[in-house]
Image (cartoon, rainbow, N blue to C red; front, side, top):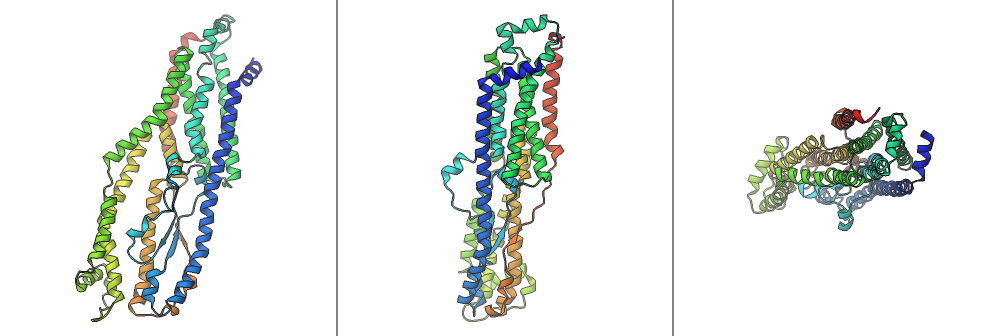
Length: 448
């Protein structure tokens, strides 16, 4: 019987079409991930070479004036791209993963990004996470919506019941063939992804695999629930497609609008304006007032005094510092709201597996908004370290050619991932189990 059901299943044109769609789009999505990773890795390699050339050129041009040299000199801070980002690109195509900063005011430099075609950003990326979250459910629906209703409508279900064999067992066999078929395709695609994207067999990759398989089983539990409502094939198709539309499209948009309106980030604009205004106002402000604020921020530099006449790098860099200090409150408020947005989104997403899986994959791959904020905070620390290294040398008029510039190479952001797999699969597992359990209990009377 099982062999006959398998043979019947693979004769279906729907199966061949589903296999073709998933494999073709799967290869394309892996290619998208590979292209993304290659592009980022090439940029990182070029940045290392470029910084060396940049420092050599500028230090040769301004070898006598360190203050002027550091006005132009940029230092690179790099957010290394995790190979798992090829699976879930997330927001890393929007946000810059390399910060090239001078020791001037920082807030105006943080948010410079690469030029990207806006139409491409609008369409988005066809990565593996998109394929799993959006397209796999449609394939599952197309393969399963009529496995019981078709038998009833064709009159063959009564024959199965009359034969005295367990009709429930027969239905499970039909369903299991479809489950193994989809899981096998998913496994092949994930294996190809691992090989082509050169992903190590790490904890993060294993977490993505587990979440992907549980997500597929979640959609099978929805199909199982709808199938056992014993409605017509047309009704099943409408209910399942409506479920897909609500869970995958409508609810994420609704949640995003709710979170955005609950925590509006108007500080992003006011912070940019304020840091620019505060810096430019200092040109017309008494120099002593600017330096008093600078000494309050850096008491260790209070020994350096302002020269009475002429231009002073001490005053100039103090003025630059004030641009950041005066906008710090808005910056902290903005980051705080972003963290609240992410936390609220994750709390809501626990009950909506498509949104949950997307956020979880971004977390694992370090492509989430939270990760980008952490990178920007680390950039602030990196920038501060550069300032503390060079301020004393500038104020003491150390010649630029007395500094060993060869030791200044791009630095890399070291991230820590606190992703908890259990917390992210608990509710999805409970929902799936509840749907299956409720369906079985409600339909016990129909099966022997």
